[in-house]
Length: 185
Image 1 (cartoon, rainbow, N blue to C red):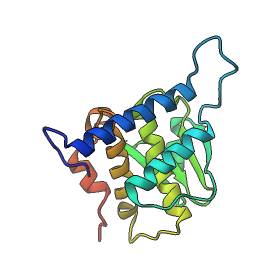
Image 2: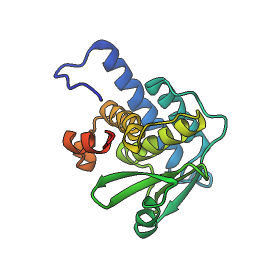
Image 3: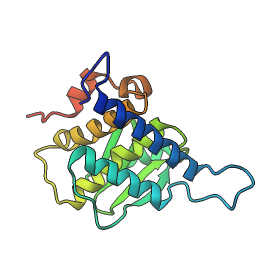
Image 4: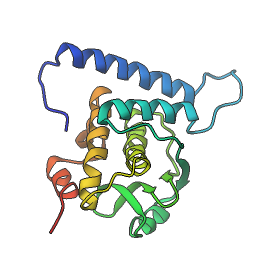
């Protein structure tokens, strides 16, 4: 979790500026200026690789050898898949599945309207990339909540360094985080 600070420290300010510059550069990859060549895919490989490198620095997870497959799905499909055994989902609240990582298929499912145009949207990809990197590293967890904790921490870190927060951007508060990141016995 990102600690709350009224005045950021110098290293944090430097990281924040670097992260904001990275976010700006990544968004320009996704949305070139009019008049340029044909637009890139909605999730260029460069975006995924840059985010994986950021996640590796933020979490200590190793970089995966393989890129995840990324597909887009509607809310019904995401909600249906969330209840399957092979999918790990990021949820904004009860029943609101935002995105999924299917470890058996090495596939990230993003919402069909995802564009990556905002740091909040990119943070959803960050969250799911953490799950991909956990799976690629062969990490095992005692329960789903334990697996979710690093993904939510990385997402919160990404948002904090780009001026957002889980609560402001997704309505995810500390109580919700506690409930979804612990092992219920």
